[in-house]
Image (cartoon, rainbow, N blue to C red; front, side):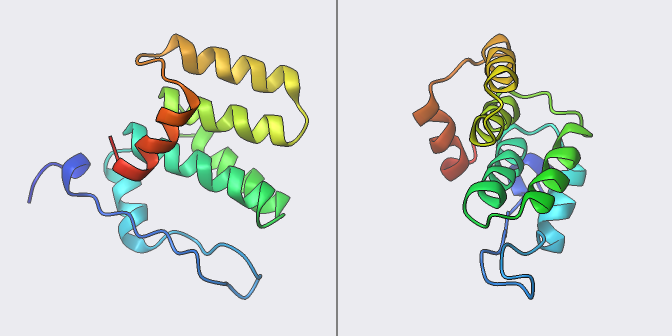
Length: 124
């Protein structure tokens, strides 16, 4: 098998759960995160999931749980901090969002908003 960051296949499920929203990540996703928790695409996906829980599913408890999990890794990629900034902005925390965005810009590579979205789709 190849290195975890090259072989990890994410299978996040967008289907409906009994709670009426996002489901927990599949076992393979959880293993991918455990095997390489500092991969930018994985941290970005985790942050995006928190933002989606907040803005699309309207489940603040799930968004808090996802945010806490991401920050416990610790969040150390610009992708993580970019999506944390979007989550905080969606909550109306402009100061927190600005701090998170500044942190994202401090970490290499500093990317534009569009590029962070593309990294979610491409995994790199």
